[in-house]
Amino acid sequence: MTHAPALTPEVLTTLIALVREHTGIAMTQRKSILLERRLQPRLQELSLHSYQDYLDRVVSDRDEVAHFIDLVTTNDTLFFRTPQVWDYFRDRYLPGWTRAHPGQTLKIWSAAAASGEELYSIAMLCEQFQQQVPSFRYQILASDISQQILGLAKAGQYSGRSVERIRLSHPDLLRKYFTASPYGVQVNQQLKQNVSFALHNLLEPLRPPQRFDLVFLRNVLIYFDAEHQETVLRQARHSLKDDGRLILGESETIARLATGYQFEFPMIYKTAEA
Image (cartoon, rainbow, N blue to C red; front, side, top):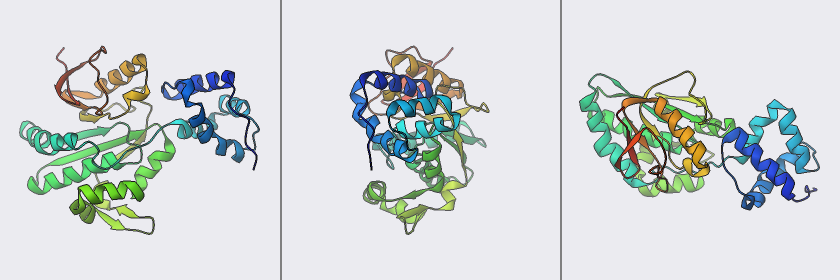
């Protein structure tokens, strides 16, 4: 098995520009080893001899763009990551929203759903809340830029670190909402019944347009430069209702950005009044 020559500075610069063009992700020259490791198997699969050959393929073949996006995007997530967020959602947000919106359906957008751990964490807490308030109804849209990773979210099969995390933090929910499978564990159909999936680039408007009460946009902005961060936040704002909430990741802040949000709690923002 042969390996392509190492990325030259010129090809790396072009590759980083191509990543930004198709995903908005701002990479630096320090990502060269990461990009080589992710792209090398695809070069071998296509019998290409250099990274320049592969760049030419991406530029000339629209069908290859989807593979390229799958390879260069990062999809690292866990069930109930950052407990503070989930305590807020379960103890404060769900009861408060239900009191303020009797008879309505809560609409949530998991805007970078990756392999699905976040969206199913949302669904589990909604299902638990529905047992306390039987009239409660919810819908979740799960989107991602990667077709491949979105397929994993739809499948709802998990193993390894993801399963160990929920086994330690929420063993009762693991027993209740998952079943054993040859792969590891399988999400029960109950958690999928109110979930829909969509391929979506966060830099673009959501199509068809929808309005949500709550948008989870966690651990995504860190991959964008300031210009694209503002674009992503603006697109999310267009999809939020006037009394909506935005949830970010623990290492993200938007204090220095021009956005339509106001700080409410750490990682929690509300739509600003016009």
